[in-house]
Length: 164
Image (tube, rainbow, N blue to C red; front, side):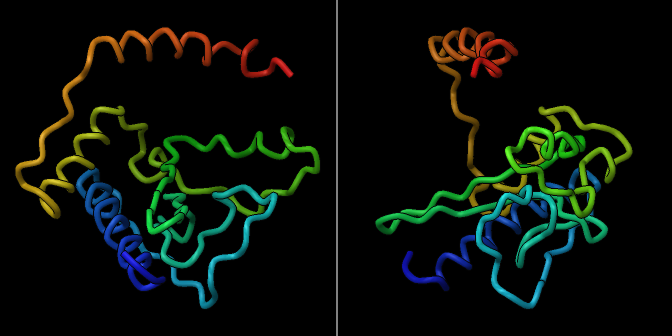
């Protein structure tokens, strides 16, 4: 993959997968089309305003998505809010930034919070339908599951999170 055209195509392909999965859950999304290029990073929270190409629900950003590119590799990462937990962001910042609007959430769109398994299944079904009908879930390695459980206990503890 080379150049901005290839990166934009990958971004669009990933958004089509996400849009298909969200539609299967009952959430209709629209691709945001601001007239300018995405703004450079600032202290404003990610979900404050949609950037070009991001997925929105009723004009509010539902999927926060970003790319990191290095030496011909692409990492796409992002978030879909289940509930609106953005209101606490200004109180956690050194220099508070007012929130301009409330982001969209799956709870808003569905009238309930979906369970993780439901969202994962919708995403996996989209991958099967659009990329590889033979795709299979990764096998769980018990050692990794045990490590994850051990680490989750530590990282969910407020004393670890707020230790500074």
